[in-house]
Image 1 (cartoon, rainbow, N blue to C red):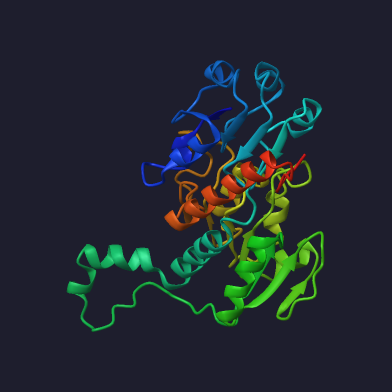
Image 2 (cartoon, rainbow, N blue to C red):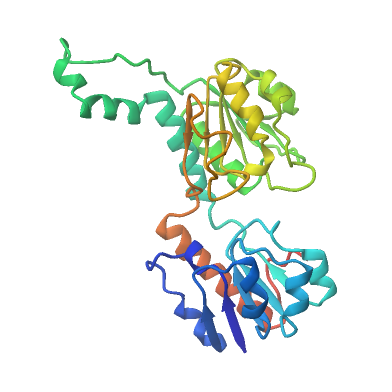
Amino acid sequence: MKTVITDAGTVTNGDIDLSVFKKYGELCVYDTTSKDEICSRIFDADILLCNKTIIGKRELDAAKNLRLIALFATGYNNIDIKYAAERGVAVCNAGGYSREAVAQHVFAFILNRASKISQYSSFTAEGGWIKSRFFSAFSLPTSEIYGKTLGIVGYGSIGSAVAKIAKAFGMKVLAYSRTVKNEDGVTFTDLDRLLSLSDYISVHLPLNEETKALFTLEKFKKCKKSAYFINTARGGVVVEGDLREALDTGMIAGAAVDVLTEEPMRRDCALLGAPNITITPHIAWAPIETRERLLGIVCENIESFLAGRPLNKVN
C-alpha cells in the first residue's frame, strides 16, 4: 500500500515524527503541495493524509487507487465528501484532539484583553515603569472577568470546554447551539439575545452553508459597545470587512481572531491594521501535545479502516 502526505508542513516543523506511517507500506511525504502538483502526487495513493489540501472531483478522479482520506483536522470542508463517497473513498476526520488547546487559546485572548498583559509588557520594556512616580504604574485600564458574561456560539466539544473554564473563573455563560443541553451554569438562548448580553463572544462553529458569513454588520450592531469578539473556529463564518467596520466605528470594543477567510493572511486582508484587534496565525490547535494526540487519532483511523471498522467517518 502507498500512503501520501501532501501538506506535512502544516502538522510538523520537525518536532513530530511522521515515519510512524511507514508501517502501512510505502510512504511519500511532501511538505506542501500546490494545486498543479496534487494529481500527479496522489494518482497511485491508497491512503491520502492531509490537513488543508483541497480534494475535489478532479483530484479524486486522478487517484484511481484511493481508498481512504485521513484528515489531520476536525473540519473537512476542503474535501468533496459527497463525491468521495460516490467513488468509494472513505473520509475520516480527527475530532476532539484540539479541544483543550483551543479552549486555552480562547482564554489567552480573554485574559490578555482583561489584564493588558502584552501592552503592559511593552510599556515596561519601553521604560514606562522606570519613569513611573509610583510603585504601581496602572496607566492602562484593566478589568476582572469574574461576573462577566461569556457568550459561546456553537456548543460542541470545544465550546463546552470553554464553558468549563469560564465557570471556574466565575463568569456567567450563555450558549447558542442547534442542540440545547441541560448543563449547570450554562443558559442556552437565541443568538440575538446572546450577542446583546455578552461581554465576551467566542465562536466555535464549523464552516458550512448555514454558518458561512454568519457574522455580518447586522450581527455586530446587536452587540454591546463594550463587547469583545473572539473567533478560533473558521474565518469564513465572519464577513471580515464588516468586522473591520465594527472595529473602526467603535461598534464593538475589540476582537481577537486566530483564523481568516484566506490563509496565510493576504496583504489586502480587511483586518490587517484594524484597531483593537489581536490576530494570531491559526495556531490555537498547535501545541506539541495537541499535535501528538492528533497523530495518534489519525493512526487509529487508518488501522480501524484497514480492519473494516472505520472510525470518525464523515461520509
